[in-house]
Length: 322
Image (cartoon, rainbow, N blue to C red; front, side):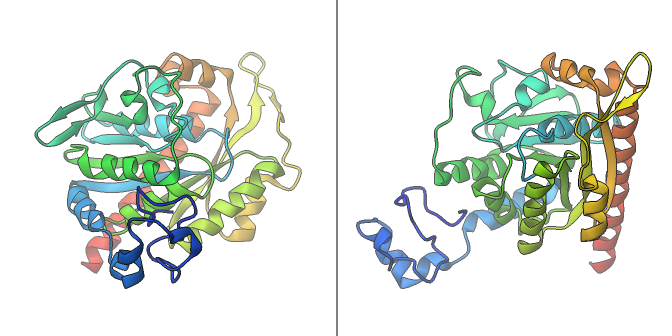
């Protein structure tokens, strides 16, 4: 949970809970008296600090999925590349998958390091207008395991948002791990003051993925996080030679299309399987520039344009309200 202190015991109920400082798990905790007094229920001062830090970031987009292995990081990377293809836009990609940071590999930045400056941590740049931050840059080896409990992960996410010198940014893309747990609660809580444009939710066509994605959608609704739309990844396989389409993961329950109709959500598009996407990611290159005319690249570009349009509309509405 995002309201669990970093030095809390394993089963801490959280500072905002009615049981704070009173449950059996609180016995012996150095924060017990503070929590019991109710003082710990005050808003985390980091939320206001992050709000001030994020005033220079126009649009904030989370990439989510309840399921692992559906292509969140791949989409986050290519969304960032596509947005940064407009030289007039500044784009930042934040990887909050603390235990499985794959963004450095996908963006071709393995071995890069983060540097400290007077204004905070300096992100690593892929292009002059595309900055990246990941815990992968803080590890001595890509094979190092990050074995942290929730509070420590939350603290790292707080640092990323508060202490990184993002500068003036048009789009901040946040790549998240699968699920609806610590990292997701933290990023939503810490950005609550700054405002999030919305979440892009990734799924694959089969029901075993859709089951978990429905949980992610429910999470978004519970925390009042707007949903930009859903993307169906690995939606058929288009043979690069004969151009025929095969269903590798059959949509046995109607796929993302039916789920979106049932839940009244926009389906942003379907991206077919293409082995060259995986190859580009392994080589740290943008698939969109490597194979720009492929069906998958065209699908990506159409989806990205819908996200641009959503953000423009969202920004115009917020200006009108102001």
